[in-house]
Length: 124
Image (cartoon, rainbow, N blue to C red; front, side, top):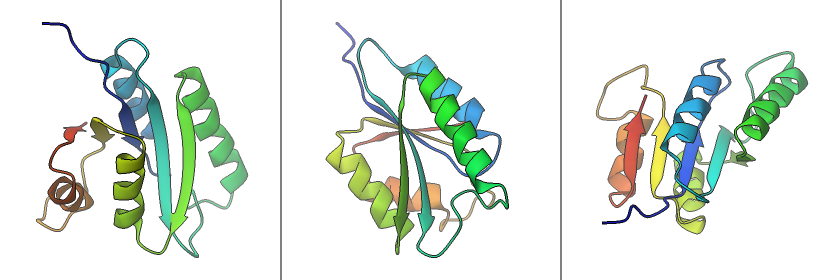
């Protein structure tokens, strides 16, 4: 059985661990599948939680470019809604995310898994 190319969405935060997540997403990509690197913040917040936001965004852009991925920076009132909409609109099959600081039933990973049951989640 031939493996189908699956579009990948790598969810990153303002942390340096984003390079590890992008690298993992690249390892999962087959053929011409599209990989999206997505960073979403709530309206009114800085994108990268840094005084050096432009440097951090440039770093993220470069990491995505090296991985031949499309970078999307999203700002929304509801981060969960924005990520769900992005995944749906871009036919995402796999979402790569880092582990949530809290393993509670209300972590962002669990919330997204509930709303996107047909998408594979790869928690790194």
